[in-house]
Image (cartoon, rainbow, N blue to C red):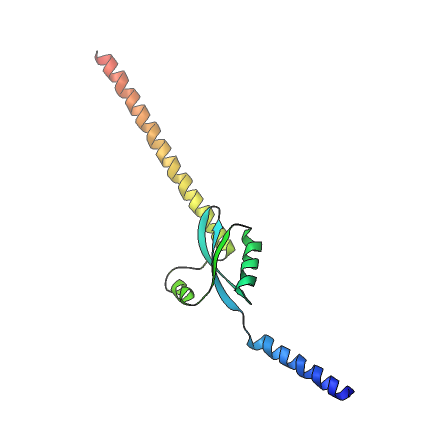
Length: 129
């Protein structure tokens, strides 16, 4: 009987090891919110629930939506659009913020220039009268 028990445990252990090697992780695509902007990202996990839990831990409650198994979406991502990881998304968000601030600076300088020009015009019209 002890030999049968040992053989049984060996067989289960071997089958579990084979299952771990043959059952690869699935890729899931999710929409996440980083600094108010929505981005698509991918993650590898055993199940969609595990993927959602991992993403919630990475991005926080309320910042994860639309977790789905990758299939056509992953092929679409490979055809031009880029699936970004968390670090890339953070860099992109900061670059976008820098662009917005630079645009606001240009707009402010243009308004100040316009105000100065209007003031010079008022001064010139006062001197003409």
